[in-house]
Length: 273
Ligand code: PLP
Image (cartoon, rainbow, N blue to C red; front, side, top):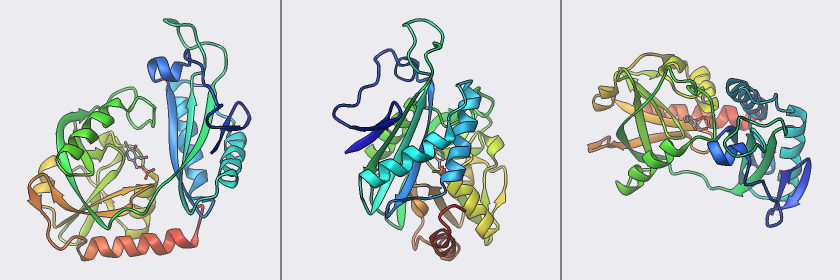
């Protein structure tokens, strides 16, 4: 397996990042997960825009997006796989312990792992912890993901594949690695970015292609929604058949099934929508 580090391809076993990298010591970094279908990254321009936006939000040096593009191309070429997940990690670089971010530049790593198509439907739980829609990191895709790791572990303990958060004012926000949509009276709604959720790329494409509306929704909308679905780079559009103890029999329901079809068709016809 070859990954990209320090401006070129390296064997993953030989590649080394400093133990003083600020990404490791304080989680000062940003990342993207990009789907690569038959060696072709999907929606790469949108992912690079978000990487740069997240980096700016953390005050990291502006990433060289041409290098990131070259790195992605080189990594998928070097590791042929039918369905891969490219992981772009960009951190604050090496800096002495206990100090601010150093002036040693940044660290860019691009790696690839194999992935597989997700089932058409899944179970989710809600968790008692909140997303801080007014926090400094709101909407940034940073490597400080430990809270998501804890919530996802709880979901797995309960036989679910995702955990959903409310924000500090009790509104439905997002999952640990996905955005959430609900169907109410035949209309599709998703929380606005102001709720504190990530501006998901699959969310934006799905909303655009299905006409979904951005709506502030209380968390308990999940107790009465006709249908619920998730979106993310690795799930695409995925129906939800259980929320906590509430079963949603027949998932994917008709509106979700249509959204899944529309997404598959449109995304299949345009690699960089
Ligand atoms: N929300 C969070 C917290 C995420 O980490 C992700 C995954 O990247 C998403 C939502 C979904 O975003 P996307 O559709 O761009 O993968």
